[in-house]
Structure formats: C-alpha cells, structure tokens
Image (cartoon, rainbow, N blue to C red; front, top):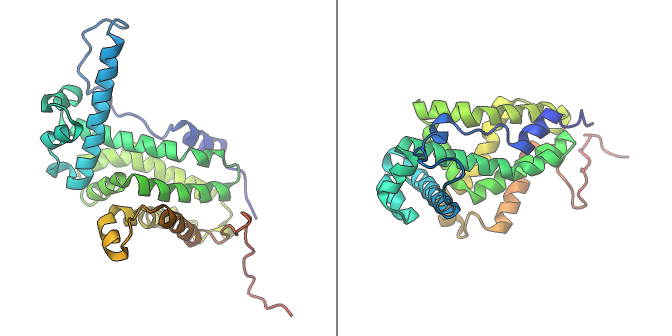
Length: 257
C-alpha cells in the first residue's frame, strides 16, 4: 500500500534547491568591485567568471585527492591554468576556496536530484533518489571523498559542512523515507538508512582505483553503474521494479495449492 503523495514542501525543497545556500564565507570572498553597478565591461565579467569556475573545478579535484591540508593553492592554480595570485584575488583564502568548491558540488547534486521532485508517489520518489545517488556518485566522486575526509574528525570545516549541507539533506531523506509505506522498505529508520545508502552508493567511486584493480574495468562503466543502481534499489526497497516497469509482487510466504 502507498501512503500520502510526496509532500509539497519536499518537492519544493528539491525542485528549487532551497536546501542549498551559499555561506557568508563564499558569498563575500570576492574582492569588492571598484566599478559602479552596471558599468563593469561584460567581457571582463565573463572572463572573471570563467576564471573563478576553473579555479573552483581545479580546487575540487585537489581537495578530493589530497585533503584540505595536502592541497596547495599553487597546485590548484596550475591545474586551473591561472596565476597563483588569482586564486587569492578571487577567494581570499584556501578555506574560502574549499567552501566554494563544496558549495558548487552540492549545487550540482541538487540539480541531479531534480527528477525526484517530479514524482508524486513517495515510493517512486525514493526509488528515483536512490538511483540519482548512484549516478551522481559515479560522475562526481570528489564530493564523497571530501565528506569522508572531513567526517573523520571534529573541525570547524565539519561544523560548516554538516550545518550547511549534509544535515538539511539528511532531513530531506528522512522526510521522504517517513512518507513511504513501511511495508515497501527494509527500514524506516533514517539514522540507519542514510549512511548505509550513501556509503553503498559511493564507495565504488570513492575507491575507483581499487575497483579498477579488482575488477579490471572502470568503476564508472555505464553498464556497471546501472547494475549498481539496481542493486542499491533492491537493498532498500522490498518492491523493486520488474522488467515491465511495474511493482513486482512480494512473496506472501504461502505455497499455492
């Protein structure tokens, strides 16, 4: 049996990405514009925006590969193809750059989760969310690498990461899980389900080098990603889709005569 439709607030949160917001540190890290509003040349704005984007993309890779302490602004600048002083010009400090990179990654996650908001039935919304978790983890393993690094010890960065990003998404997941019929899922406890799902959905891509060494094929091979998403769905849901895209009948435990 299905319960109430996906709450309007839940759909709004996902569709509008309200759960994501830019922190004061990243929103004020640009150097103040010396030009009056509307007078800065459009071409210069475009170049500046492109430079910032390249720096953020490079920083995401460096922070994911080497951790906050191991990533240097020189290496980030080299990866981005810009002069090192531009990193400080646009972001002020390495901490502000780290937050900007994490913000960007969660913004990408929100966009990836937008199909969840199109589902009106909680079970189908949860099914879509599970599959989106897997496909995003395959495409953007840097996010889960950074979360794993920061989640291993208390720090101000962890406080910011949880308060700004992971706690709102945990509540979103918990709300969706609570709206599903308990008979359709293996557990309704978000404290158990959240990290089980995130870990199972992401470890293959976080440890992609090991996955390649063990299996002989890239972790993000499209066929393997689809099979991975199928498995995650069957781990969490008691009613996976059959080949005709309909719910399969759950066994009743009674033998037919």
